[in-house]
Image (tube, rainbow over all chains, first blue to last red; front, top):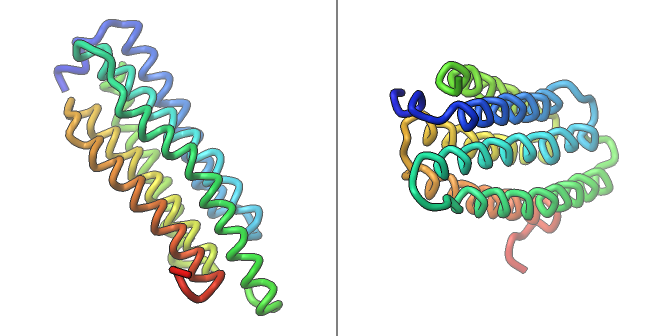
Length: 109
Length: 89
């Protein structure tokens, strides 16, 4: 925990603010999974808000390791890029699966 | 500042974990459960990265990348299985 206090103040504040905003976004996205009534409504929370929240956490981590170590830290952007590319694809596949199920058994879910 | 805020951020992500776990156990349909698993792996990536910041190590990024890859493959395979009754083909 001592290394976190050696950061410059601007980086510390930036990372803390970014983490707070992204944690709120991810929590709202996951809470939507509990709160909403229909599967098609529930799909919106995790695919948009949670992805945004995790992207924010990864960017905060990129800032932290760029300030902390010499050189530019890029792996986080790899994970962020991958998540932002795959979230719409998996949402599309899920909707296709749900529509297929609803068509084959009209009373289910 | 980050040191004081970090445990609360982790608590928020654990709460998000519990929300998606509830949907995973409860969810009235197969797509709901797949969606809950998808949310679980996305939250796992965030928690791994947060532990990496807390313990000042870059070792966990590889784990996060592997979780991202396998989670996407799992979601895609499960959706394909629900849609077609078969994964390959």
